Amino acid sequence: MLDIVPHPAPTSTQPRPVRVMVVDDSAIVRGLIVQMLEKSPEVAIAARASNGEAALAELGRHEVDVIVLDLEMPVMDGMTALPLLLAKQPGVRVVVASTLSQRNARISLDALQKGAADYVPKPETGSLVNAAEFERELVGKVLALGRRRSAAGVGSVPATAPRPRSAVRPGVIAIGGSTGAPPVLLEVMAGLKDNVSQPILITQHMPATFTALLAEQIERAGGRPCAEARDGEPILPGRAYVAPGGWHMTVGRSGATPVIRLNQEPPEHFCRPAVDPMLRSAAEVFGNRLLAVVLTGMGHDGADGCALAAKAGGRFVVQDEATSAVWGMPGAAAKTGLAEAVLPASKIAPWIVEACR
Image (cartoon, rainbow, N blue to C red; front, side, top):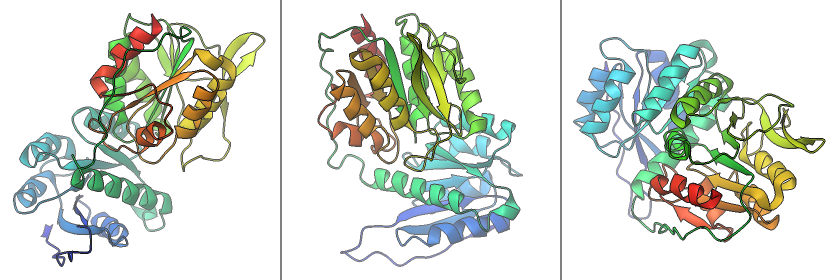
């Protein structure tokens, strides 16, 4: 079933709305998602489709900025359709909307590696009607990704990649990211493999089902032990620690030993885990031995923590605008004026390696 919804052209004084296609085999879910998106005057529903094959046909007829894509559909499922959709209309952004089963979480992470820009955990059909958190996250990501595509190349901030300043050798590396960050994170971890011995703390905006699977991917890519962090465990060289979904991961001390501390204090920037609590606490414990990295993501989580890291004598670098899916978090951190470098995704790991020598 295909539904085409015409929208009036924007006037010269209005920005062009973000054009969205919703792909889901359930007519009820399609309708609810469309209703959520249409509450925003900045969104225009370009088309709807009930499976991947129908979505490909619609993409041939309409310019689309963002596709909201279900995974489990008849005829052609979301994973099969994903690379075909990206090839048919280069530059289109795909947001996977999937229920929070472990199987779908694994498939969603695979989709991120294959070109999807982000995902939104989808409640069960019956609870979609009052799913305010799902709506907030979905609309926010669609707008951020759609605006990013519309503004691609306009007013971008150039990367700067100076050699790391002579400084105290880092004692810990702390990495934060959100929208679009998982593939970059795996690229960075692969580049650090066998090249740095410092412990690595990672906060990625993700729900609980996802973070355990992300840790598995990081262990494979980075060639170092990696797992969801546990409260009270020591922070040891050669290991990586992922903030578990639903918990802020911070740094404390047990005697002279830095340790992981987990808490369920209120979300920051609508997120738990959030990057700022990790960086604030790491700056307190490690001081000038903290090296922070902020990857692509919506909002400004991490900017305040980076400023505190710099104030404590630590250092931070951010991903550049050109290689970010959304230059929100890294852009906010860069705008503090305290970043040591603004780097393309491919240059982050080499820079860290140089800084750690």
